[in-house]
Image (cartoon, rainbow, N blue to C red; front, side, top):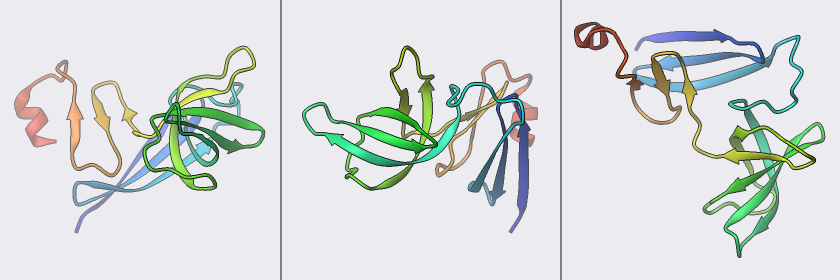
Length: 134
C-alpha cells in the first residue's frame, strides 16, 4: 500500500488530496487568507439539498455561510441530503452559483476525479514514456 499527499496552493483554496493505491481517498480544502469571492469557480463544497425541483430535475443547495447554488440533474437526491458539489459558475447578479456533482481537480497537465480510478493527462503532456512512468 502506497500513500501520497498532493497539495495545490491556489489563490482561493489550499487543496490536499490523499492518494492511496491509485485512488483519491481523502480531500481537504482550506480557504486561502485573501479569498475575496465567496464561491469561486472550481471550489468544492459540502452542501445540503434545500429544495428539490422535480419538474426541472434540479435542486437548490445550501452551501452554508449564507451561500447557495443551483444543481442541475441531481439524480436521486432528496431534500435534506448532504452532498459534495463543485462550483461551475460563480454567483452573479443576486443569483446563486451553478453547481455540479461530478468533482474534477484540474491541473496544468492533469485531471483528477476523486472516486474514479486513475488520472487523466492532457494531450499537451510532454512524452508518452514520461506519462507512463508517472
